[in-house]
Amino acid sequence: MRRIAAIFLAIVLLVFLPVIIPVVALLDRAYRKQLRAAACAFACLSCGGILGLESIRLADAQWDEHLRELREKYPSTRFRLVRHVRAICPACGVRYAFSERERTFVQIRIDRGLSAADDVPRTLP
Ligand SMILES: [Zn+2]
Image (cartoon, rainbow, N blue to C red; front, side, top):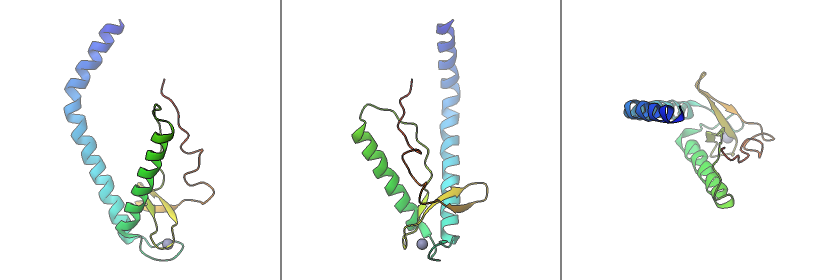
């Protein structure tokens, strides 16, 4: 029975994967476009400056650095992480999450942010 399920899963993946990958790429591209548009129109709630594209670059760089540190610290661990910080104000450093529904940024509280509770490494079964 497990072999039939594995064969069925392989067939489904072979049929739908060529469709799923471009769809996911298009959805990601649309998301990034919304993020950039919102960043260029959003004034920081702390300093009043426009976040701009630099804020997204800063958040991406911080996330990449965070992932690199986790990989170094736990080299054989696979992670399930949720990313919250999507923009960091280049002027004052306030961090923002992005609300897709409202297409705007939401300030992340300092005591929450990227705390250890948000990204505790977990191993997959
Ligand atoms: Zn600011």
